[in-house]
Image (cartoon, rainbow, N blue to C red; front, side, top):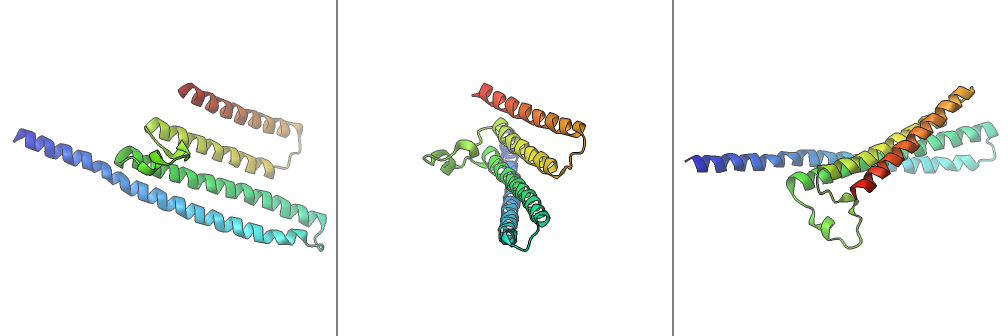
Length: 178
C-alpha cells in the first residue's frame, strides 16, 4: 500500500509540472501579440515617411519628423526586443519543464540561442535581451533630452560609460562560462 501511494503522489507531483504549459502558451501569445503590434507600428511609421520628402516642409518641420521617426524606430526596436524576451521565456519554460524541443536540437545550421539546457541558460539569455532593452530605453531618453549645461552632457557620458561597462561585464561573464 505504501509503495502504491508513493508512486501515485510522485505521479501527481511529476505531472504538476505541466501547469507550466499555461505560462508557455500565455508567453507565446503575448510574444505574437507584441510582434504584431510592433510590425503594424513599423509599417505605419514607414508610410508616414513619404511626408518627409515634401518640398512644402520647412527645415524645422523636417527636423521634427526626423526626431519623431528616430523615437519611433527606438520604440519599434524596444518592442521587438520585448517580444523576443517573451518568446525565449516561452521556449525556455517548455524545454525546462515539459520536454526538449527536438527540432531545435537537430536543426542543421540553426542558432543555438533558443536551446535552453538549464535555468542558468534561460536566465543568461533573458538577461542579455533585458540588457539590450535597457540600452534601447536609455538611447530613447538620451535622444529626447535637450542638453543645456556641461553637467548634463557629463551625465550622458557617465550613462554611456555605465552601459559600456555592463556590456563588457556581460560578455566577460559569458566567456567565463564557455
